[in-house]
Length: 355
Ligand code: 2P0
Image (cartoon, rainbow, N blue to C red):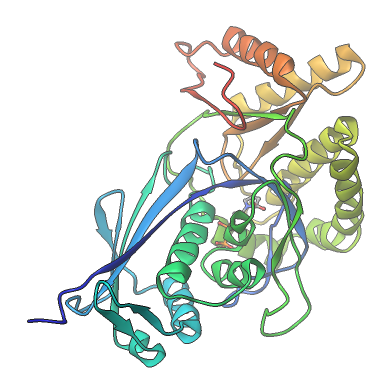
């Protein structure tokens, strides 16, 4: 019925990010406000990214979402909080050619369809929610003509998943914990863009693509409730490491960068172990990868490769340059042949492909 037949679409692609100073613990569960600052690297969008197409049409009668082709529910608080924030900031939109005219108030009634695809295993500790919510918020902000800075959008994505706020930027990103009760100052900022330290090569070793046992959300809640070590980490260790990591990134000081990255990953897993009941994210293969890299770095007399592990057993390794990355792949394939018992399923090379 004339005038009601239009559809408007927007598509975005967003890479995941890997924390080098970890976020683990919330001070506000609903707004997703963290207990410490964190710093991450955003990967290049060719690997480990989410692509999301959002559309709006007067013919849609409810908000709906499909993830990897399967319909999923949008009823959760996190989706609803993001959608509400975006709708309240949407502006007028007009496209005379297509006969589309949307006024600000119309966004409250118009319904949205969302189709999202991950090019990597969902919920295997490879930060799928980070890329997912960042992409959703960015695509919807474009669709709805939301007038907000990238940092402001990061505060909306944060309400979908904490780590998502950092994927609104490329390169090296800091999520500032903020002080305000409403979370307005808990935003991501870019420390350096993706060209700043282009020698680095990220290699992800998929140790297991299975769904993780303890979700990050419940895991960090239990750590906040039971770990005494976490209090020392948030008050003493992380504030100092944030300052040192910012300096290391600015100076492209790989030795400091690697030392801080590995130490922070290990302390994150230590606070998991300090949780009651303890949380185990790494497995024996993860531990063997750590030993392999530690021995190599020791033998060279200076760090060649940094490692970091999130809420799962998969290793994220950062090689200081392309030559080192090639050697790293060689070693990994030698010590962890894809056929053996404890195997590496596949490699995804971040930054620039070296294969
Ligand atoms: C990080 N991780 O900084 C840390 C390190 C995992 C280990 O952010 O509850 O999925 O959605 O805010 O962001 C994983 O936690 O948790 C995470 P919610 P999220 O990347």
